Length: 478
Image (cartoon, rainbow, N blue to C red; front, side, top):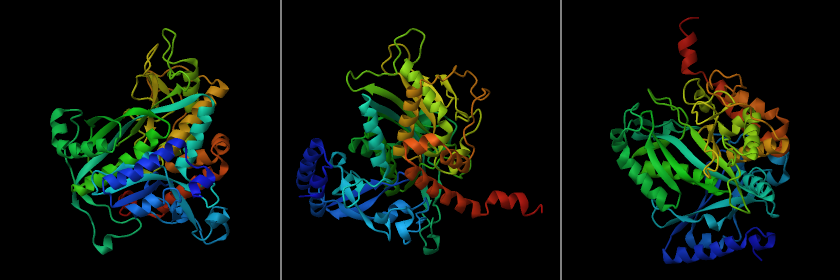
């Protein structure tokens, strides 16, 4: 009996998808298949198998080292994996032991930019069939299951800002390597500050068209492409989908864009604020609502004149506000992302809501009897792990529903309203999460402590660096 069947890991839909996958591999004469899983940072890792071997491993899984879960954003292993418990407090992960990547055949794609190559998303399991607790896609699935037990589905639409530059120097000399290596030198595809002008769009269109073609060939639900305010900055907007789909879309989209751009002599980055003259910060606006699994109705939709949200929607909104500070480490997980939080900048700096106001953290869109009613969270950065971002939203919102919290009045002047300020740094955000009893209970102390440890390792490396700002500020003066 296969590993999948022994532990009952697949649904009927997944078994049927596995049959279709094997047939497509043969019909399209695929040569290789990439088995990938999203790590703690939302970055895809995995192995590439010869197509026949990949098909054979669908139900048996493919081994991969647990050190993949021990790395910070420099790809350094920051847990003491050769000590007792491997630094995780789990014997199963000691000594860089293996776990199994088990493909989810419903996610299978043929990559349009890589010849004869398939791709499939995987979940991580121990050899006894237990899900690996630090695998964020599996954690998000558990949150969705709890939501489904209440009779709801999570629906999310994505607005993703990012930069695309022309690659000038890839920095590939041996002395450029490291952890991390030297970043590439780039030039602009367009000047900025002509927001949504057709001229700027046309300057970027040759590259944007390549991305559009391949992103749509992947089956991702792309809705529109726009030029953003800054130089070489753009935004892709995706239709709302439910469950795992929006998070999977975000992970695959980011990876695809970077790969496609590189193959065409460009560098795409989802870093919030690149250190390049005149560029603007990028955000990730997450549109969200809950849908009844019985009726398919948007349960945020108000049926009362003058009310922008249903009572449930108001309570959910209040929960997002109440837990905003502690959730920020999931919405904005990099040191760089906090340089976006500036007053009067179309980015939020405090936990406040408003009706169709782009200065607030939570923007309420829609109204009475509008099935498109939703909350737009404008706090996130495009580098966020979508599984943790979305899970934190659901958990926070449901707590507001359970406690019947009131979000208070909306804000007409969001940067002048008295409201809790968002963290000003990743360190402050990590402290807020570490000391928050709600997330320790709902996400589990094990996962929270694991994530805090990795983020602290990233912060400590930053604190040890002498920055250009310090050199300018102090070297001549003192």
